Each structure stands twice: as structure tokens, then as C-alpha cells.
Image (cartoon, rainbow over all chains, first blue to last red; front, side, top):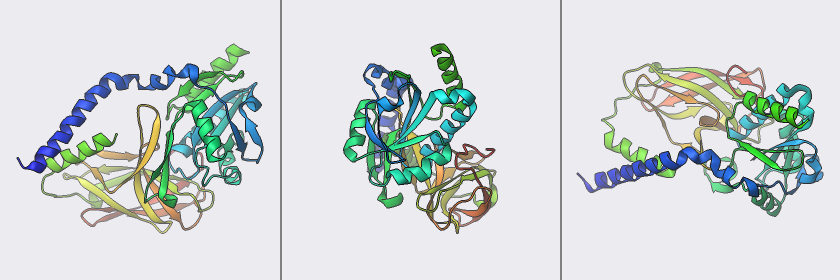
Length: 201
Length: 152
């Protein structure tokens, strides 16, 4: 066995051990964020895609679906935007009780006018929000979400952004209710929202 | 999980036989679709399924289309904390008899430097280039901006 082969097998072994660890703890993964649920709150001051300064209080009285992304994101963000658009269509009249909010974590490129030409294309009910780097940081801290600018030569402008891809649900009083993991099918979200709206009255 | 990427790469290096590769004629590409774009300033996306009907692995090494100057394969991965990241794939291997799906939330073609807007209802030609030098060219239909699958 060459030295290189030894190193390679060592890498495989470390991964196998890590995989074992993940199998034990990874199955609890969706609950990781829920563990901190009590501390998740929607506190922010951001500018919407019409140029209006908004805070979480503006959306009280409706169920809020909040998710994060950036408009140069070709895969995850349009998929979630499309999923939420489907939910809003399927909710019918009950859609009036729901406000989807798309918060950009890319203050460098996403200005309100960029969001205005992008976000409503998915569904007119979805409101895009963005702010200064400090405002986004403050919002992220409140929602307990993660985002990071990652240098990527092959991405537009040489960077991409890793970010929390779950959808957050807040009740009409602004209380955190739950997360929908990335890829939760629209019908599942719709059914869950229906039940909650019916129960809430 | 960068660790698993390294491990997979290590394992691949250890187990790779001398390369005898399948190519364009053995790979059937189905269910290709794209989302409409708004203008040309943001990257577009394409999804498809690549089925390797050959007896040898096939390796996708590149893409070409008049629609975008830099078409490339990227992978979105979501970790246990629900954080999604995107990384560039130099190549994508399709084992003999297996299929690889490029679908939302996973592997996808990122279309950088769009040359014109992607209009719903139109289509464009995309060539998939394989390691053996062969190519497979498909026509990709452009669906609505909020499409989530090939039948939307």
C-alpha cells in the first residue's frame, strides 16, 4: 500500500465514522432548529420591494410564511418561491390569511427594485424584503438563521450564498409556530395551514 | 458535508478501474426543463434525467448552449441544520445502467451569462459533453418561472 493509498483509506475511514455519528444524531436533524424554537422570533426592520420600510408588526393579524434567499440563486430559491406560489393558489380564499415574505440575504446585489422585478413574478402575494448588511444580520439573529457569503469562481460576481432554506411559519400574533423543511411539498404546507387557519378561526 | 465529498473522491481514486467510458450514444436524456428568466442578469437553470444504458460508466464533463456563455453543473446540498449551499461539479459520473437526476434541490445545470431572456413556451438546444468526447444534444423546453417539475 502506498502512502497515498493509506491517506485515502484514512479519509474513507473518518467519513464512515462520521456517517455513523450522523446516523445516530442526524435523524434528529429537523428538530435541531426546533430545539431553539422558544428563542426564534420575527424581529426585523427591512425595506420591501415597493420601497416601504417594514417591521414584523406590520404583518400581525396574518399567518406569515418567511423564507430566505437571494435572487441570483438559480435552484433552491426559485423552487421554494414556486412552492409557496402553489400554496397560495391552492389556499383559495384562505390565502387572505397568509402573508409570504421572501427575505434576501444578499444586500450587495438585491435592492428593492431588483426584488420588485423578481419576487412578485412567482406570486403577487409574496413580498420581497431586503436591508443593509446590518439589518439583515439583525433579522437573521432574530430568526436564528444562518447565511454566509461563499467565494465561488463559477458563480455570478464570484460568490454564492449558503443560507437556511427552511420556511418559517408565524401565527397572527407573531409567535413562531414551526419550520417546513426545504422540499416540503406544497400540498403538505397547504393542508397544514388550512388546519391551523380553521382552528384559529 | 465536505468530509463525505473528500471520502467519496478518495474511494473513487482507490477503486477506479482503467477508464473505459460510455458516452453520448449510451446516455438517454429525458424530462429536461428550464424555468423562464426575468431578463439576463441572473443565472438560469436546467434540470433533466440522464440514464446510462451502456455497460460502462459515463462521465459528463461539460455543457454547451448558445443560450448561455457558461453552462455548468452545480450541486445544492442541504445540511442537517437546514442550510443549503451550492458547489460546482467538475464532472458527474453515471454508473452503467444507472440514472442521475438533475432536479430541484440537488444537481442542476446553472446557465451563467444568459445571452437572451428565457421565455416561457420557447425552447433551446443544450449539448451535454462526455469524457469520451461524444455529445448528446437535447431541446430543453422553458416552463413558467414558478415551475417545480417537468410537467408543470
